[in-house]
Image 1 (tube, rainbow, N blue to C red):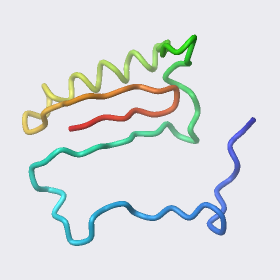
Image 2: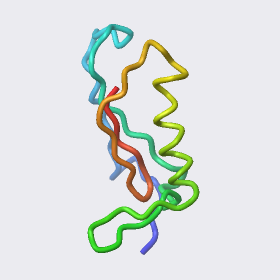
Image 3: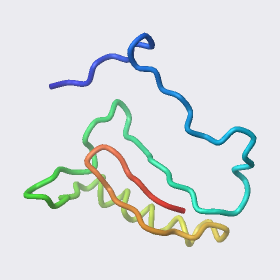
Amino acid sequence: MGRKKYNPEIHQHRSIRIKDYDYSREGLYFITICTFNHVCLFGHIDNGDMVLTAYGEIANSEWLQTGEIRKSILLQEFVIMPNHIHGII
């Protein structure tokens, strides 16, 4: 089953950002990073476990390096899913 083409009439995405909040401020931020067209590049779920592909391994490695490369960021929990990553920074 493929993904349906974006239709603004039925796919109404609203921003969940807090109006007038300064997102450059220190704090905990929940982020989601999606693959292009939501293609399952990072792996697949097998019996409840995430099995990473080579791309998933790269995503995992790059996430972990983020805290080393960007000293102003402290990484918290994260999870890699088949077509997206959730993380708290």
